[in-house]
Image 1 (cartoon, protein in one colour):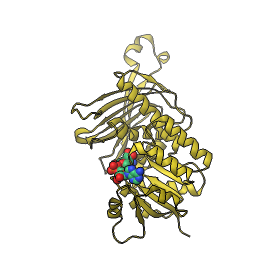
Image 2: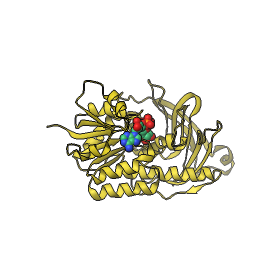
Image 3: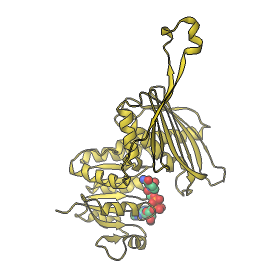
Image 4: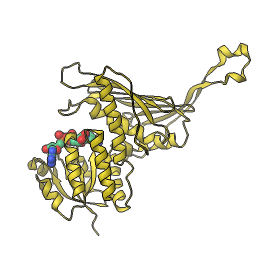
Length: 349
Ligand SMILES: NC(=O)c1ccc[n+]([C@@H]2O[C@H](COP(=O)([O-])OP(=O)(O)OC[C@H]3O[C@@H](n4cnc5c(N)ncnc54)[C@H](O)[C@@H]3O)[C@@H](O)[C@H]2O)c1
């Protein structure tokens, strides 16, 4: 039996990665590549292929052999394209960010739920072996209570024509936070500062703070202007600390048994209290072994599995909505000089 009939929409920078991985996913059967520039789609497919190219999205949606679409077009087009696909009865995988506003994303999430269709967000990093292990370590209690998260994602990046750096890069960090934090640890407020020192007309670097319900604080630095590429996130816990350096291929994750312990004041004599309230712990560092596996291959397998098993995918539309809630609040804060904006998150993660 052949797999789920799939069309990829968008043959720009990211779409070809979906095409390559879809072609090697057993549960999927790639049938179309659609781009407004059909020539671009043809070049991506090459000469020896049975996959059809077209510039007409309507033609793809009208094909009864297509049960699902994977959309990799600019963010501003996502709402209309996803809605049309859902209304045509197709399952949808859509690139981050799911739409350009929370209200649009919530409409799509509701439409998919009412129609019994899968609507999945490509929050790619959530499918990397490193992030999956981080989630297991945090949710399994290995590092204790999360006290802080510090993420740096900086590089010489393409200044995007339609979104600023917050909307381009921070969805990665915010979707990772959403994925790894325990379900009862949720963002309660956001503040962001953003800058455009080259006069590009949109923010090219930004600093984003996210306060969590436990009192912990997460910080994200995204930047298109850095000559050095840094992709490091530190998850500080009450028992251990995880350092994820995605550029260190041999040891992407390190788990440090080091930290600061607070000695309960009641257990100390009054004369000991002043010096002994804080004690430093210096223990071993552990490097978990991780499989080398392309995240996008797991994204497409999960999409196929969610459709076959009639269940929500790991990163469903509600996860996309929660990421947008933080992004919208961050933009509002940045527009208001970095003021703290309270957020009330969608339930469930
Ligand atoms: N998950 C990731 O790590 C990751 C990485 C890069 C980009 N992305 C996301 O992928 C999406 C696309 O980004 P990109 O960098 O590939 O953009 P791009 O501009 O390089 O390519 C977009 C393509 O979509 C086509 N297109 C636009 N509207 C269309 C329509 N209505 N029908 C058919 N084709 C249409 C354009 O002709 C273009 O070829 C964005 O949402 C971006 O955030 C995700």
